[in-house]
Length: 186
Ligand SMILES: [Zn+2]
Image (cartoon, rainbow, N blue to C red):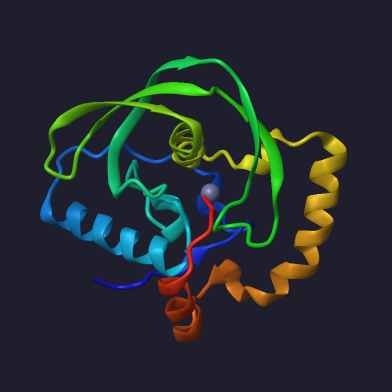
């Protein structure tokens, strides 16, 4: 397994829709493994394929209850509403409150290529909605009010010089630190 480079805001692929996965092959499973490795190394709770420069419609999540891979995920039920602060591995150090459905049902294929249905609430529901948005070119900052979005983008303009070529390369030190501590960035 390897830790992949993360595409940050400004990278065009983050705004492009993904392509449904036609067959869950060993190559797809290898990508999922690398994405889990990258997500844990970056201290995240979710990671979608475009964030590592890939166009397959798939994502990985782990909100502390174990790893879940979703291939071709679809939200088939969304109920309730909840507001909470979100971040994104592709927009480091930027946070904002986003309203999302509080309960969702997601249908997807597993890493074994089997269809399954996932009922989620709280952080898992939020994380799944955030990652599925990524698969359709949408980012959490899109939900912010005009003023909050402007403030977030002004802050990002100062930070983005740390990511030449819109790429975030995790250092060995960051990876080691994140093995010890975990917090919540989607
Ligand atoms: Zn994200």
